[in-house]
Image (cartoon, rainbow, N blue to C red; front, side, top):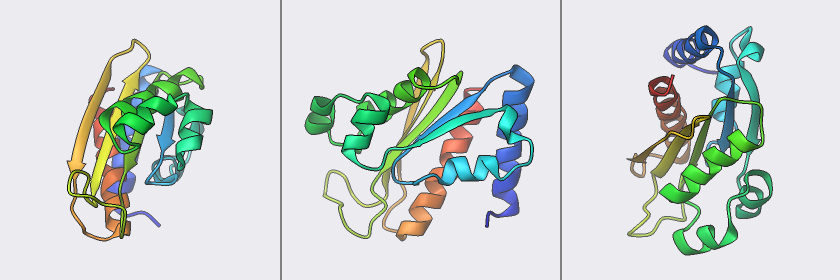
Length: 162
C-alpha cells in the first residue's frame, strides 16, 4: 500500500516520538486518513498514535475540532488559520502531545486563482502551544498525487517538531 521510503519516514517519526515519550494525533481533511493510515501501518505504533480525526467537511472541522465557523467562512477551509486551529483542536480533543493537521484542494475541481488545485496547508501543534505551518503548492498533479505529497510533507513537518 505504501512505498518503502514512506514507511521509513513513518518509522522515523514514530521512533523519535517514542524516544521523547510523545503521543501523536492527526486531523485530516484532504488526505482522508492517509497520514494516520501510514503511521499505523508500522507495527507497535499504538504506543505513539493516540487518535485521528477525519474532518473532511466544514461541519466536521467545527464539530470535531472546534474550528469556529466564522473563521472558515472568512478565510476558507483551505487556509493557514484553519490548519492551525485544526491542529490545536486535535490536541485539545485528544491525549496527544503533538498534532498534525492538513487541509487542501486535491482536485480535480474546486480550485480558484487564489486557491488553486494542489494548494495544501499543513500545521503541527505541540502541547506547549508552539505551532509550525507550511503552505505547499503541489500543482494540478492529480488528486492522488496531491494527497500522497501532502501525507509525506506532513510527516516531514512532524519530524521538525520532534
